Image 1 (tube, rainbow, N blue to C red):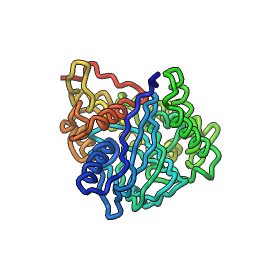
Image 2 (cartoon, rainbow, N blue to C red):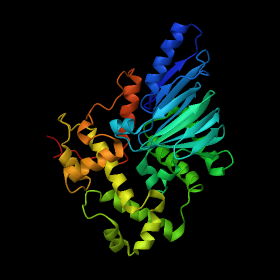
Image 3 (spheres, rainbow, N blue to C red):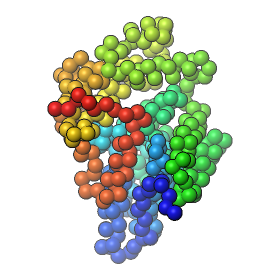
Image 4 (cartoon, rainbow, N blue to C red):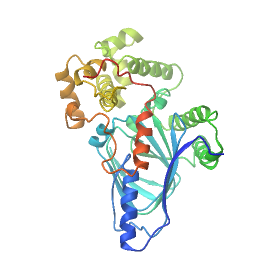
Length: 352
């Protein structure tokens, strides 16, 4: 009996023939394109096996990868074109990569790398990498009050941490039993894997506990649920939560300040809306999206959007977020990624 867990898979046993190696690289490049653009290195060896599996568990994606030496690049324009606001956690079992984001970091076997897919990053792997992957919508980690933005491009030892090791073992268990899972299992597995990963990351985040933690969760949840309110800002938050201006600003110091945090959440919500067609196949109006995420007018929204992403919201192509030359599997994988929003977006009344 076939498992109801959907899977995309690419696998090559390797080749020495230049023509075959070129074909393998092109297929590999296409398959990885929902996440990164790739460049070959002198160390890239396509005579050895490479593979990548991804399973859709409903709320999350899990998988594994055996990748050759390569350079991976994720630019802001790719993020904007896809409209994703997700987090990729990659548990290295072997290999080595240099991550270039806010600072240079070297990741090796036994470490977990966090990618905030709303931010650019370059990854240079001078040797083959084996890893387990889990992709979650940001909302799944926001509920745990993690400072995802600050953790982007970091590498954390998961084998030296009890919860990190448990999370890794669970991912191994899911992958080893994916073909035997039923749809009844998926919600609980998605929730358990998300919570385990969040618990591991909490131990390496700078957040507080107790009442402070609950307050931080409530504030960010309030912001997420009220992005359409034009008045959403420091003054409203101070009144709503009884906080002083200084306390509020300290709370969001790691995100560049409360106004910067709200603007980033608004712009990422706008990205999701701009890249989605309505049920009738129409693209959303820029002005409607601007108002839906709390901007006072289309002009100020377009200016902020261009400052953040480097081009205008009118240049985002709704319904065309996929790779230019995808191989089918890549198209499916990207559709899975863009559907993991954490909460559905409302398109009614936003189309022209």
